[in-house]
Length: 264
Figure 1 (cartoon, rainbow, N blue to C red):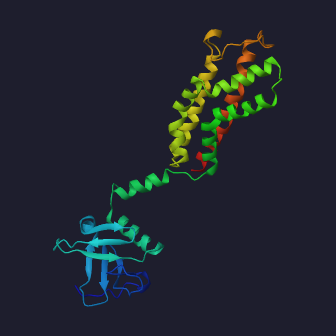
Figure 2 (cartoon, rainbow, N blue to C red):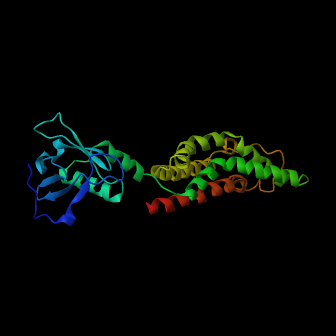
């Protein structure tokens, strides 16, 4: 059909190309005319008019800046249409996609959803690395304390030795069993769901350690004492002086995950 739609405002027409080569002159223009999508060519090609009801079957979306037209009267004939590879071209593609009434099940939307499920926060990654390295950080700090204060009191020596034992104890296995998977997804994959999972895993680990206090003394996770501690008459003081710093250094930074999650 060679009819030209004179009533259509020229400014509302969008240029398109038949090749994906930059710098070429437009091969024609397209515009919407009520429920029709009209492709007018600059050469002698006939104008292509696509009814909105046939848009899904006639138009195939190749990428964000190109489509493929398959005429219903000749399905073996395909015509590639390219738009400028910039914001205007993508806008035209999305407008045509909306006009065709695509239901949103194509793979491209899944990729977009996966992208939107990501966060961008260096602070959250630092917190995750801190939590994963915490037992060994305590081990290193207490090792230095043990070296600097070799003549310390028996009480201080016990707590320093206990904090060193913490990094090599079964508690660390529990620590990494709970935190390792969401921690990896935070550091390497930037996944939003991992922020919430890491926070809940931290709460679970802290709750587990707090519950161990109520166990009988011989079942608690403390190593046996070789000295008479000044806190021995207050068993809770001994338990919390050993595990309190570990739990606080583990739990308090985890609240930053909630701050990052609120941004998204």
